[in-house]
Length: 92
Image (cartoon, rainbow, N blue to C red; front, side):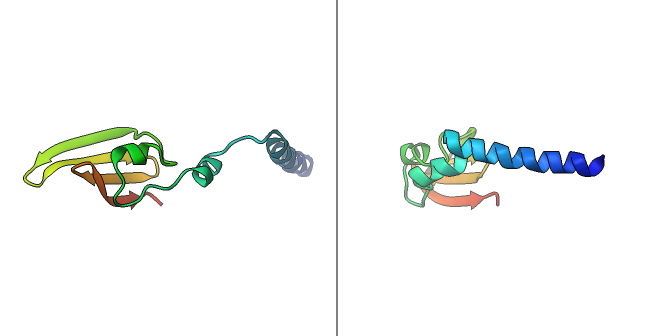
């Protein structure tokens, strides 16, 4: 009985993958193939247009060096100084 259940689940997984390819279902990986990854030197608008999209949260602060911000994403954090990306932390 267990063997039949495992075999059924494996067959179902293979069928689901084939159907997804036939229907051309978009995945997050496909989005990153069409849009650039965030890079040092980008503006906040360019980061939003990247494959990471809009941030889940933004923490801003005023410092002696100007405005600083941390954009939080599931993929990691992007640090900005005066509107320019200065550091990218990946969650991987």
